[in-house]
Image: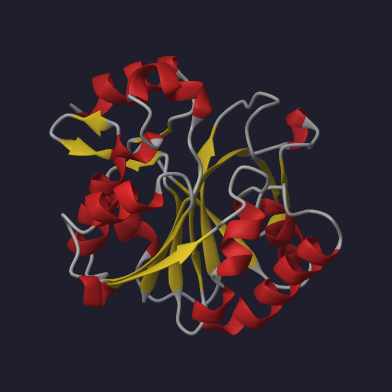
Amino acid sequence: MKAIILAAGMGSRLASVSGGNPKSMIKIGKSSIIHHQIDSCQAVGIEDFVIVLGYKIDVMKKHILEKLNEKNVTFIENPIYDKTNTLYSLWLARDHFDDDFIYFNADVLFSKHLLEKISEPSKYSQLLLETKSCAEEEVKMIIDDDYRILEISKQLDIPKCAGEFIGIGKFNLDVLPDFAKYLQYGVDNGQSNNYFEYAVDLLAKDKILKAVPTEGIKCIEIDFPEDLERAIEMFS
């Protein structure tokens, strides 16, 4: 199993506290967000990394290589990171869909215990779900009684949603050809500036994907300064 981390963006909404660096380099306690992610992966035995970069790519490479040996990481450049979004960045990594992988956005801070929940072999691909009442901004899931994901998007009827997809998932090898197909479909149909959940939603209508509740294990997506304050409270 490998980890694919999307870390191409600047994080402009946190520019006031990032010092001009990518937001995944912001420190929470003694480590940056992306260093925390790498540590959590290694704690569950993941040593192979594919990381998509864009903004300040050389600065990010140097920062990541403080934690990883070059032989354990493949860097992919998104040269149009400022015009595209996570769908396009993950599409750029499609040639590395040759093994099960754990997916992260590089702005998600979480306890390693969440990876323990989904890193073990499973029949179906799994996405982590924080069960709660959601807001318009959040990526939401509609699931059935067996936790099969029926729909995933920001644009869903909130009362029907089980909670928020927190940006961490495990995709098994058996669904990856179809996943790559739906990412390609998105790129070909003008969705390069969309979120990767656009392709996941199409995949969920074709294959069984399961939601796995976080059950209160600590996790937060850091988009705004107030998120950063909460993350510091949670993890420092």
